[in-house]
Image 1 (tube, rainbow, N blue to C red):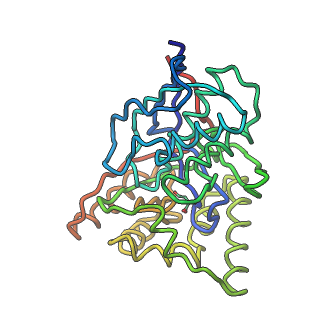
Image 2: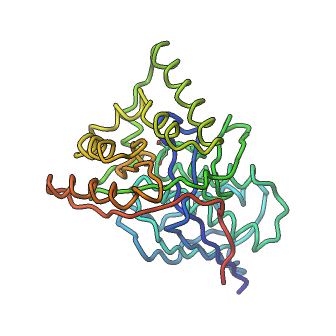
Length: 311
Ligand code: HSE
């Protein structure tokens, strides 16, 4: 049976103010997806899910991010083909680290390679974004775009998909804590305001533009200030993440340039450099320990590498 295996990295979406419009790929962790052509059928089957999985990850193609993404690509190209998909989760689901997006990115990347499809990144990102319906009820593309092509991706629109990508700032490092709190993306989108006033939209727009400029300049201090400028998304979601404000205050006091929620949470990232990354991670973890909140903490860095084929 013909098969191809690919892996795609975790990512952080939003980076504070750029809700659904900006994603940055991380060097690790990664999800691995294997896609095989099944000549005996015309359908898509999720055959195996292993690794850091949980009971929310469905084997039903219509409720699985990789299944939906594969289906979107196959349907879009009008292919009649049977596929078997095996998923190995290296990224904790419902962490805010683009776990669903990485599986969706890996599956479309593997599939296009397997079938020798000559299609552009926009088509792959659009199909992978369809996979996000399984987690978020909405096909947002910030995580999948970063996971697929690596680096920083800024999206102008989803339909038609338009983006600009550029390399990650060399000195940028993250300290990340993932509290053991379940935050489902669909729920953390449901708490967002349905309307915002002119003052807040102006502030958010400024923060977002400033963030992109600071990322392009590789200016960590200004990246941090922009990350801290979210007046809409973070205030609405912070209440879903016990310990968020305490961790943020502690990280900033310890010298982090900025701190906010990884995507839809509950992960919390701090903007650091190589010299203060370890100590800031320590302080963030100690804060959660003092509050008796279990967590996983790790140092991370952004990466220009997106999805790739592995053997
Ligand atoms: N932009 C998405 C959100 C990312 O904030 O809901 C989900 O990880």
